[in-house]
Image 1: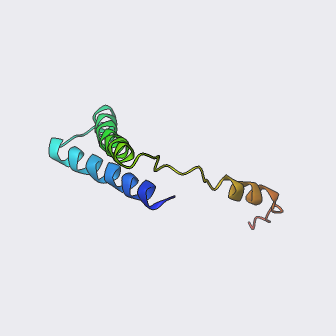
Image 2: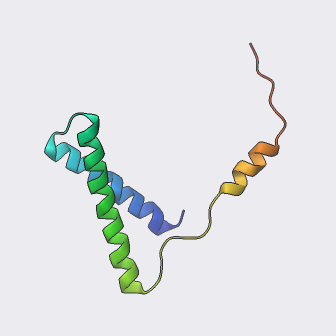
Length: 80
């Protein structure tokens, strides 16, 4: 994750938490809605920043190659 990806993830999570607290939300449908609202705040922030700097802040890098290495490891013995 790049610095910006991490920062925007944190913005979305904090916004969701604060919206949920402010609305005193209970129940899955309401929590799902506040999660969308928090995510929208992060998305809009990302789009505005990308427009200002003229490039994407989302990296093409990922860590899927680590899961491939994990698959190649010999199976571990399970103790009973």
